[in-house]
Amino acid sequence: MPQDPAPDNLDLNVGQATDAVLIEALRQGHVEALGALYDRYAHLVYRVALKVLTQPDEAEEVTQDIFVTLWQRDTYNPSRGTLQAFLSVMARSRAMDRLRSKGTRWRMLQRLQRHPGSPATSPLETASLHERSREVKTALTDLPHPERIVLELAYFEGLSQSQIAQRLDIPLGTVKSRTRQGLQKLRQVLSDHR
Amino acid sequence: MTSPRHSEDWQDLIAGYVLDDLSPAETAQMQGLLSQPEIQAEVEALQELVDLLDYTPPEQTLPAHLRAQVLTAAQTLGQEKTQAQPQSQWKRRWWVLGGILVALLATLAFDNLRLRQALEQNQHLVSLLRQPNIQLYTFAGTDVEPEAAASLIIHSDRAQATLVTHRLPQLPAGEVYRLWAILETASDPLYCGQFNRDTAEWNLPTAACSQVPSQLLITAEDADAPPVPAGTLVLQSS
Picture 1 (cartoon, helix red, strand yellow):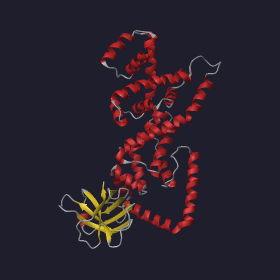
Picture 2: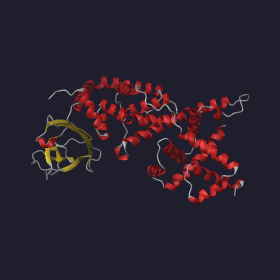
Picture 3: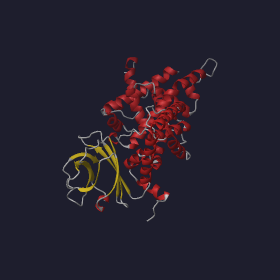
Picture 4: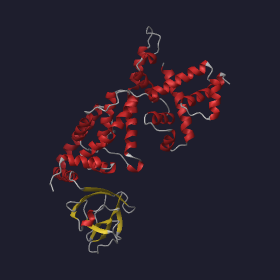
């Protein structure tokens, strides 16, 4: 029997390990475990971040940030849910924080584009699709938390209304009414910006 | 029905219509409103909003270089337990890094030997984890020691156990912690070794201890008691 395992052998074992085993190995400082968790969940984290931010380079930074933070200060608690859900929440939350911090600058640019003398069309009409999407998502950060969270879970994490009700521990009817109100308030926020 | 004082009701109906979650009664109500141009315009505006919320850019491929970048950053930054909030801004990260370096230098000056011992211990654990045929178990404290925890590595090829405990008090002289395996093939708990330090390594008393158990238990026992669990249960595998 060989004394030292071949690297391929190690990768195979790590790749087949459960999330719980990998998290424990990560806590023990095993960087291969981080690599295996990255292979498993980086696509999910990147997709959620990109959906919120619409900019690939920013989604990339958020993805890196999340996995490095998981390595440095792992705060995952298995009793509160799966690692997949934990990373998905983290991706959405970090991306929204970034959107919020850049929101002020974004709105200033929007106002500058609308000064007298510029064409009569609104910036929302002239901007590219992903810029318009980003403006809507930035406006979302101005909504009250109850309405904002149901929209975030529905559109950024792809949860159904019943899954949202379960996650937030609120009745399905409340999810429905908050989604409707959220959409109306979002429209109002965007109207106020123009 | 479509007077301005009812505009809030329209808005709610229109939002429900765009979100496709109207009740049958609301659907009937909405059908009556859809012929009005102002309602149609409102539907279109909200639909655009939903489409923009739901929009994902086409560049969905995860950049291939990112994996190596993440692992390099992780290895460079280490696993320092700082109090800083995890922020993405590099400016803040430099402050955190500066703090870590200052703390690290102070620690080195204060207790270099201890740090080196901890490092050797970590390297030993990492090298153990690199071995094939290992089983890794985690333990949570029972009501007796709710804050205690432990991790156990069973190396089945070498018939060895390596255990690291956290917040498990050291027992007085004459007492030890004992590890027991609950196996489906045996009716009684199987004695798999004892320890009384926060880090311990020992040879497993029997090959059966390398089998995958249904549960592992750790009890506090008299050191000279027979290998039958009679003491307090302090930790159990999750």
